[in-house]
Length: 198
Image 1 (tube, rainbow, N blue to C red):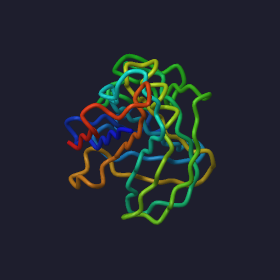
Image 2: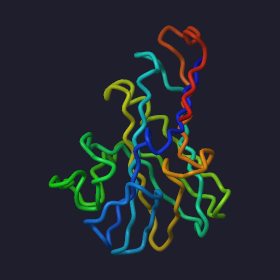
Image 3: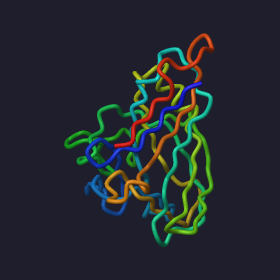
Image 4: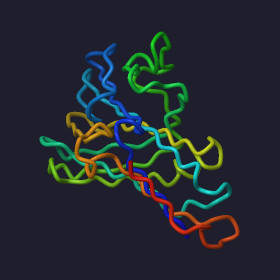
């Protein structure tokens, strides 16, 4: 079995949140957030590259760890596959995935057949939420050249949570994806575990 750990910094990371009340404003340089208040929703989009995992491998588990910011509340949400490959971190808004290019659905285009649900801890700063990303990583490895594109959105109304993004100055608080996999044929990972923490 092999393991890939990704926790990119601002230069290598790609994440943003989309804010319904300010639908034409980009938030690609701050936190990632989720909010379920009617007409005031917030969704987050993230992308990771797991293409260093050998083709044909089985993804045994994959977990996205998000570090809560102060003021977080206990809430539920879902992690779905974001389908728009052309999104730009410093241009994406609630209405557009890049300058001059609209989402098909405001708030981010998603494949809802690929969905995992979660409940946040909601204790704020210092709490870490663990989201199941296994089906998303398997699909990315098999069908999308290893690019895992994720959209986080609420499944209930009235609550919100904020997480540190790859722009955090504290490396340990940035989004972290940990993927455990078995290479095709069931052998050990060539060269051992793979780790990338930028």
